[in-house]
Amino acid sequence: MTISGTERSTIVAAVASPSPGRKLADAVNVLSNGAYTVSYSIGAETSNAIAVTITVRTLDGRTLDNRVALDLLVISSTSTYALNTTDYTIAASTGVVVQLIADQVLRVITNASGVAVVSFTLASGAATSFLAAVLPGGSMAVSGAITHAA
Image (tube, rainbow, N blue to C red; front, side, top):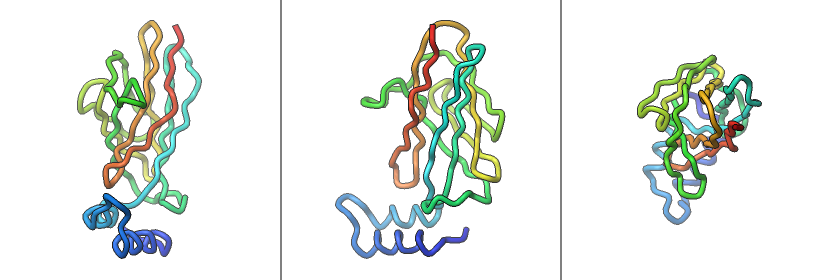
């Protein structure tokens, strides 16, 4: 893994003067697992399916040149982080998705550019869920609403 000057500065600053609650282990975690951001683009519902594009970039916004494995929680509330109870069919059209716990905990592996497209299909009815990526150090990157209309 190559660390850019910006990422190196962030890590050095975190180690030299950690913010409250930040540990040296967090900085080591950034070094060993890579430092990145996660963003989401939620498509329109088509035939009961909604495609969510997940993009992983370096801290300074550069496109990745390698695959990244992300653990994602499928949650029903952004205030309580309650796990989803909706029965989805989940599949990836770009990257790979593995359901660690059906419809609740996913491991997504991006393509070599840091992008994955995961579709959430609902057989019938209405539902709203969110994705929460677990980032190095334990912080979360939460998507907007994935809303299926009735």
